[in-house]
Image (tube, rainbow, N blue to C red; front, side):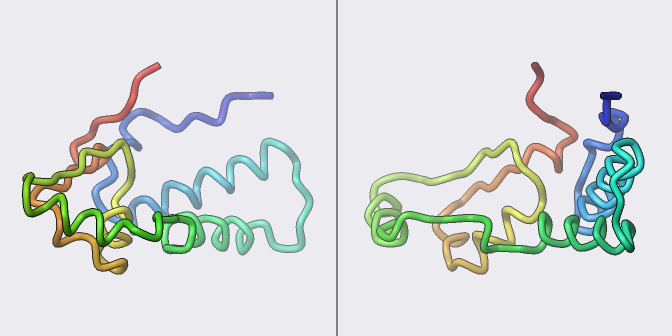
Length: 116
């Protein structure tokens, strides 16, 4: 199967909208290359991209995460450094966990990603 890698410049993702556009393009290319048959491939690509970017439910937290962070913040300065995408910050904010961290670094916002 042909490679579906997007150009390296595409990894400089700073907003959720940029991530959504990236995944929409990825799924569109995927469906074309695999000759996937669907009534409306564009709508399906859009739905999958929206789910990846805007679905907070794809993240799971331990039940005791808030109480544990509460205890830790009294003794330590907490931060997150993540090889992730922009929605991660929104997920932590929506979960009420963002204020526990004094530093929140997401690799894609710094044009950085894991290398093989």
